[in-house]
Length: 167
Ligand SMILES: NC(=O)c1ccc[n+]([C@@H]2O[C@H](COP(=O)([O-])OP(=O)(O)OC[C@H]3O[C@@H](n4cnc5c(N)ncnc54)[C@H](OP(=O)(O)O)[C@@H]3O)[C@@H](O)[C@H]2O)c1
Image (cartoon, rainbow, N blue to C red; front, side, top):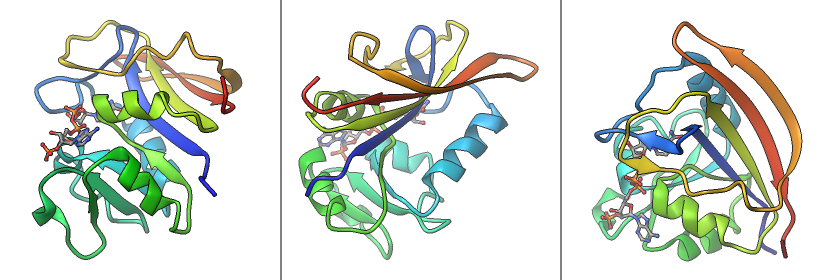
């Protein structure tokens, strides 16, 4: 039985998620939220995202890295050659499935006909960058939670959005 998916992302109003292979911001509250939310769960992510998060396997997370480079596999880190393969494997493991990017993986996941929850930190700024979260606003989301926050540099909102399959 396929599990519901969780997508988790921090993106700017112009949908930027990365610049030059790094997060274009440092927002400790959001990073702590991301780590707490994914702790103990299955995290599915692309090879470049994994390269920037070497501690992905800490705190009981089970990473599945999507890549053609099988050499990345090691104790506690699985690899898969496609999102479909990653999800077929993730469905057999205990825990929730968190899709952690990057761009193409988010796009493929959003197109799937599965129930999903989007944990979106929307940063209220247009930020320069070169990797984007796909347009999500046109999909039939139901907002189930919202919390506003800010630090010295940014205002941001933590949204929880849910979508049933078949929408
Ligand atoms: N703000 C956020 O919330 C957030 C979230 C995630 C990532 N990021 C940032 O985004 C950047 C990385 O994102 P990215 O989009 O450039 O790269 P990515 O998706 O993390 O990694 C790209 C690589 O993953 C593999 N891959 C991705 N999609 C695939 C697919 N559908 N099928 C097969 N293989 C696939 C390929 O690996 P091979 O070339 O090895 O085959 C590809 O070169 C990083 O800077 C990261 O920090 C930000």
